[in-house]
Image 1 (spheres, rainbow, N blue to C red):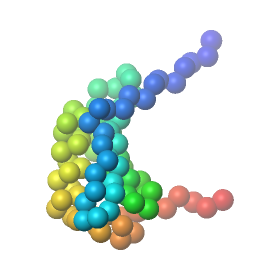
Image 2 (tube, one colour):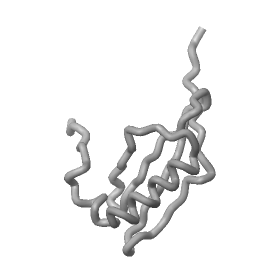
Image 3 (cartoon, rainbow, N blue to C red):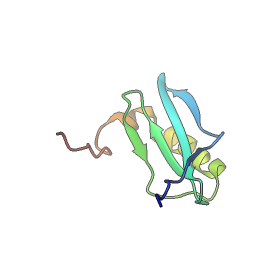
Image 4 (cartoon, one colour):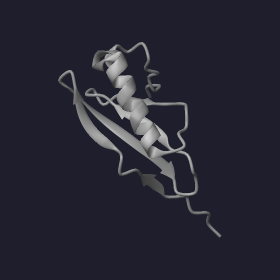
Length: 89
């Protein structure tokens, strides 16, 4: 018997926005068997910023993304000081 991996559920609250002239993708998702949501913001350089915190609702995750981008500004996501690079092969 092969265990199937759970499906990924993408929230309808996921969206694309432009802040300070920079495009952002706000992706909110969960595994089909989970009840909490994960938040990922992808900046204009295709750098992924994933929150460690899980959210009780997709609306809460979306609101946190908007508030964070508004409070920090678009440039804060692109400074590089908050990015953990993947190891090169």
